[in-house]
Image (tube, rainbow, N blue to C red; front, top):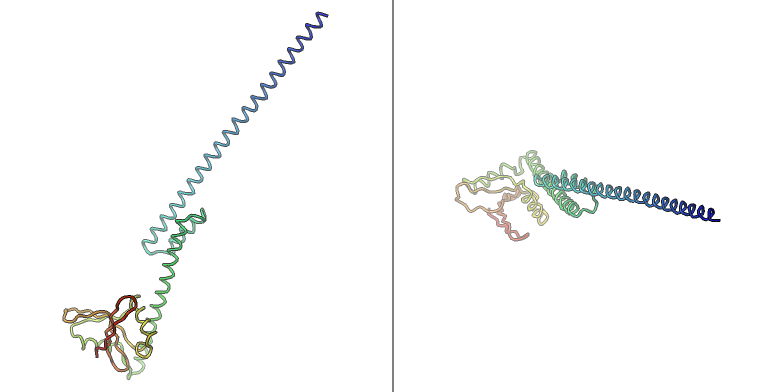
Length: 225
């Protein structure tokens, strides 16, 4: 009986040792797995931070290139760089605001170019029609008329965007007069005259008009001759 009891105790001790050993191995396995998972999470977080930084660096580079292009008035190129930035971050407010601003400038430039082209076409048509009919007033005749009125002064044809806008405004106001006019800027080379604004020389009556811009869209127009 005593022998059986001792055997039972030994067996019980062995069972307890086995259980403790198994539990220890299980906990160690979990510990190793947790360490591995923590390392993987830390690595993934570091990689995400690195990717985000690289993305932001690329966006900032594109925005800087866009700004430099805009300084050189290359707005189409600037918008291309901004498009690349917005591919990386469609919600980037700086890139969106710059693209909106540059797009408006491009549209304004197109409108100005269209106005300038229309005015130049009209001037060219006036010259062609004058050369085809000797009875009509020519560009050189208009220029000589101004030089006779203001000796010692020089005159250049209006072809800048602001001047062409003004001509378009005048032609809308009074097509009868201003459609058949030649427009010039006057330059007082000897300071004998106080020349301001531009001049229009009409084809029909050979009139000379002094056109002075005022505030806003106000114009002061004087018949000189």
